[in-house]
Amino acid sequence: MLITAISNLNHTFANLFVHDLNRTVELVRDDRKGNAACYEDLLELKKATWFDKVTGYSEAAAMVSNKYGVGAADIKVVMTDPEYSSIYKIDMLNGNFLDSRAMDRGESHAVVSGKLALKLFKTLDVIGNEIELYGKKFTVTGVYKDKGSTLWDMLGDGFDRIYIPYGSADGFVEKPVDVISLLIKAELDMAVTKRFLENELGSSLFSYKIIEYPVSGPAFHQFYDLLIFFLGALAALFTLLFMVRFTLDIRSYLKKKAETFYFKEIIKTDFKSLIRYLMIVLFCGIVMVILLKFIQFRFVVADKYVPFDNIFDLKFYLNAFLGDIKAVNSNTSDVYSIVKLNYDHMAGLNIICTFIAAILMVAAIAFFNILLVSDATFLKVLRYLLIPAVAGGALGIILSIFAGFGVVIPVSAWVVIIYYFIICDANKKLSVNSVNL
Image 1: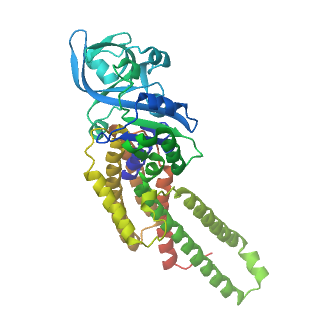
Image 2: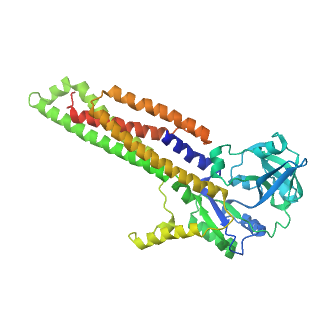
Image 3: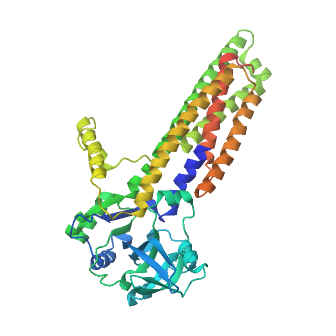
């Protein structure tokens, strides 16, 4: 159940907030530092050919109301541009996201959430209605879909967001851009990307913290990947052990028969059994290849944790660890990325769930060893395996749906886990009984 839920959590994060996590980079402004980039700098950055997409946004808390005086608090107004929806995922329920013509003309348009539309107007059909922000009228041109889960509300910052074009806010040209978002080219690495940013933004770059999702994205679910990798590697090792022991038993059997019969007679009398033996060995080889394919994952370590000269430099690792603690303790900035906020919270949830799953896995292995000692038949063992697997997988999918995750079936993880117990049973039976062709 937990393996399925964690897998769906990982799948959801990679597909819920951004279109391509492996190519997305955010620059988040530190409001304690001056000389941040403004909208004109953002326009210059858009002209650069180093990136596939460039957008930016600035946020501010606000109150919103309709013409009847029905209002809502806990609102953040996001000043941005049409390219925002090219990097971040915005699923529209009605109307369209901000368009370039409204942006160029500085029209007072707004895109609201479905939850806010229902709160203000009791319907999602609100295109053309007006809302009031900062004492100014805005026409609703689109309604986007909420994340739709209590869990997402808990992981977020508690604000509902209204999107407006940069040009509809007074003095927007001089306002600092809170977050600059980039969709980098697939062939660029982060070192080259940073050099390009230094060329384009100059000293303004030092007012931003660079969030590298191409590095931190895969690291998000590495604990889960390591758990499956460890179990799959053990299963592959036990399969290899089974092949070696099975081959040695066959060798002993043939050697014993060779004392009485010629080799041609052995082949003739035991031809089907020998073919069955070869099929078992071939099957084990194929299974090992499949296992190694299933447990492959991209292991990522941020550059700041990798020493350039000596990998055994313990002082370097200590300083990197202490640097992270200092960065967290000193982060008093009111500017943040909502994607990074959700990332941090979900990463913590991921680690906790993976740790619990690992503990339960150890308990399951211990229980299974007791089951094997009791000399249960293979069919009984298989029944003990498949019934919890199917029930747990189904419960994991139900849990994922209620939690607001996207639903995928982690077939590879299920196969690795079930096969691990099957090969343990096979090795146990082989150690107790000699091979009988």
